Length: 274
Image 1 (cartoon, rainbow, N blue to C red):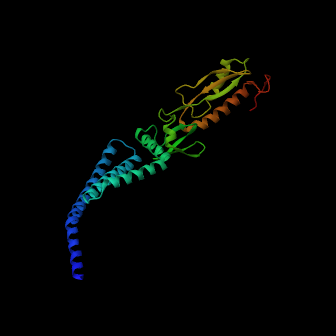
Image 2: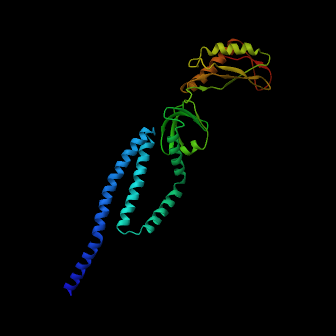
Image 3: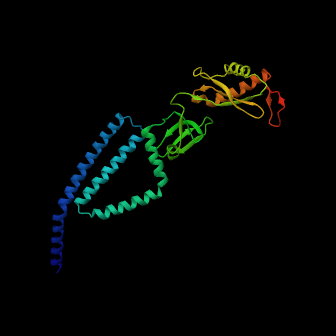
C-alpha cells in the first residue's frame, strides 16, 4: 500500500513537472529578458526626456511610472504563460485601482495638475508669482504642491490643483512688476504741482526702474479729495521695499510742500505731519 501510494505520488509529481517545468523555465526566461529590456527602455526614455527639456522633477517620475507599467505588463505575460486566470486577476486589480482612486480623488487632482505644471512650465523655481492673492518666490515645484516664500518669509504650500484652476500671475516672465500706490490730494490743489512733487520725490526711492517710466495720474474723484495713482516699475524682489519707501517718501514730500488732505470726519482740511 505504501509502495502504491509512493509510486502514485511520484508519478503525479512527474506529470506535474512535465507540465509546469517548461512553463516555469519559459516564464523565467521571458521575465529575465523582459526586465533587461525594460531597464534599457527606461534608460533610453530618460535620455529622450532630457533632450526634450523635461524638468528634473518630472523626469524621474515619468521614467519610474513607465517602468512600473511595463513591468506590470511583463508580469501579466508571465502569469499567462504559467496558466494563471488573467480575467479574475485583472478584475481584482481594477477593483483595487478604483477604490484607491476614489480614496485619493483630491490627491489625484493635485497629481495631474503637477504633471501639467512641470510639463507646460507656466513658472519655474525662482520666479515671483501670485496665486489667489498669495504673492511670493517659487522655492520648489513638486508633484502635488508648489512651495512659495512670501516677501515676509512665510512659506506657503499651495496645492497644484488650486494653481491650474485659477489665474497665475508670473512677474518674473517679463522681469518686472508694476506697483499700484494710491495717494490723495485736495480739490483746490494744482494737479501738475502735486505731480511734479511726487516725481521729484520718487527720484530718491531706490530700485524704481527708469524704464518703463513711472505713471502718475488721477484715478478717481472722491467726495472729499482726488485720488491719485502712482505706478512705478520694479524688479519683483523689490516689491515691498519700494512700496514702503514710496509711501514714506511721498508722505514726507507732501509734508514739506504743505499739501493738505481731507480727513474722513469731514471736509475740513488739515496739515500732514512728517
